[in-house]
Image 1 (cartoon, rainbow, N blue to C red):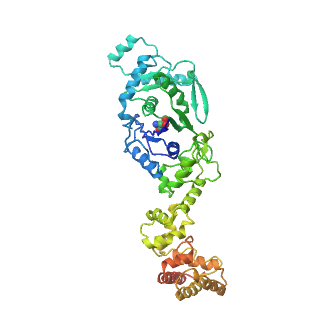
Image 2 (cartoon, helix red, strand yellow; image 1 turned 135 degrees about the vertical axis):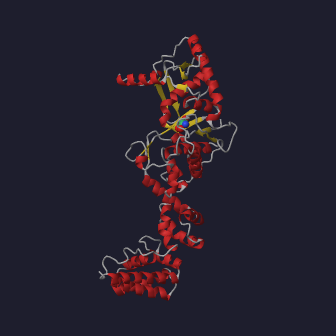
Image 3 (cartoon, protein in one colour; image 1 turned 45 degrees about the vertical axis):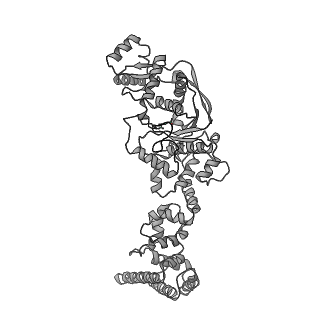
Length: 481
Ligand code: GLU
């Protein structure tokens, strides 16, 4: 049996990390088994529909590299992949269920249901439909339908209990009395998620339903529906919750943002995929660094864990640094490119190896490489070391200038600069920090003498002169400290 699984988002908002994790696990499992990964859009909730959502979901999946085998923009043997275009299928299933008595028309008004809910709340009873329309006389039902009364269709949950078999959780037994007579078709004629997803998972030959475990409580209703319709249920896999570091459900409060915002925060899709894969699964080898193809090779759905996963931002940063360092140099330069659009091509190529080793996020690129685009504009905070004064700093810069004037800048100048430090009784580190700020305006840069080499001798001398002039100007304005 070929594996066919699906990621089935409702287009009601942006793609979030938890949902992306569900998509990824479906992708990994399908690819591992040489099966088919399907994207299906569950757009039957007209009230919560968000027009921009589908585009960002597809963009997010593609950013991660999770191209689907069947679905929107790709087509496939089970088109259409939008539930809103498959309504007759759900209608036919609902009609069958009504005909067999497994579902019934319910004419209760929203007002009555609201009053019911309130009285249940007052009586500290669990909320749920009280079954008023369960056993209406068929003639009465026919009359009300003929009169055009609005109705929903509810499933008639039988007595007894229902077992949900989950590949990683084993079997869970649910008492049917705890299950509501779920609405299957709303009064607007649209199916609810429960009916539509069961019909589609059957029609699309889905073998495995891999989804977040917030759906586990719905699973017994789905199992009942399969039975009522005479269909074989798929294998279920419910993925563990994703929690914030405080073990509360992951939310905005934990800085959890839409998936694509991680792109804008300078994370590589490779790192994001690696990180998401470890939310509820582990290769068990002790080595967490993995690429998408390696994840596909190693993925074992039976090793998905049951206990919740914790979203650890420090781990994401760590993996991002590792994936940055693993990129081939030209590829790294290409990833950095959008962050420093003004940087000349050959300078970027030459500077990339200097920063690749030290970056955690691509957002650091402008700070680290900006000095190659423009000279520091005034701000030279920290150019005078704490233990020295402005006049001494001017002297040191002049001496250092002479070293740079004598030879092309590069690591070969280090001995000459050490001599400068000794002569002035400065630490070598102090000389280098003063020079760093003179040349770049920033205390954090790639290795300084390599950076100076990229600037070239003329530019280095000009920047030292400008710093000396700035210090002298400041000294003239008020007494040097
Ligand atoms: N449309 C549901 C969601 O948005 C899919 C749940 C499922 O995979 O069955 O999460």
